[in-house]
Image: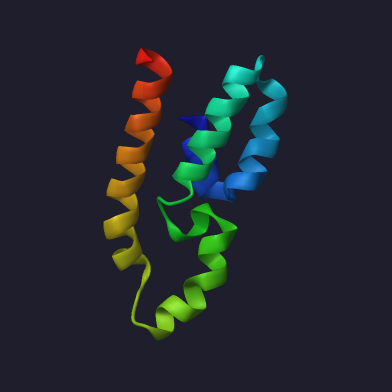
Length: 89
């Protein structure tokens, strides 16, 4: 959960940089990489790539609410898939 929160607070790359030193084992690193990347879809500020294209998106009439309508469900579903994969498989 820290990866999801930090990814949307400070973006996904800085979140990984902050959390990675506190992890032990490559399994935790893989999970952090997956979670932070997928969590970047939650809100526009979650990924630098989102911020790069936001200007073009605004010109097309896409705002943060429209992004969140798609980003939140997609993020929840993909994080659920990662959780199932890591816990059950």
